[in-house]
Amino acid sequence: MCHEPCPYRRRLLLRQIQGVTQGLAALVSAVCSNRVPSATPHPDNQIHQTVIPKRELGRYDGRNGAPAYVAVNTIVYDVTNDPAWAAGSHFGLTAGRDLSGQYSACHGGQPILEKLPVAGRLGG
Image 1: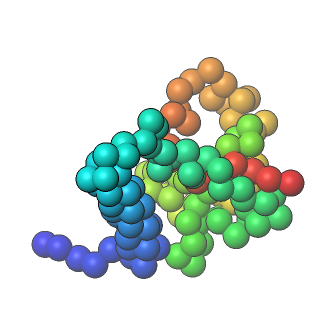
Image 2: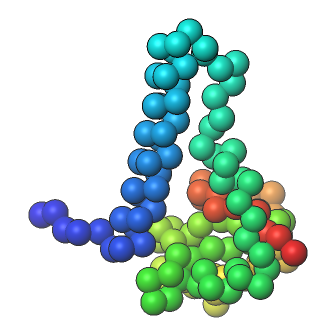
């Protein structure tokens, strides 16, 4: 059985496909004109350059179709599709907040964050 993904997930997938397609088009163009770039920018590098202001982080609380983001040590992670963060909450903590202190107190030294997609970095 196949069903239509939620609008947020659909937009996310379309943006990812568009980013990859644009990167491939630029690479094909460079190869065809014998101008192969020395380093092709990786899509993740562009994500790390996205700045999410602290005052806007609260919008990403996982409610009403919004994505669920949490910040830890200035990096903003997308926990929208993480089962541990169902409905934008995890053991009493809610998405849309800087959880640096709570993370280090509970999960310090564990590689949990490495498995999560990075949405950007937390700005002032």
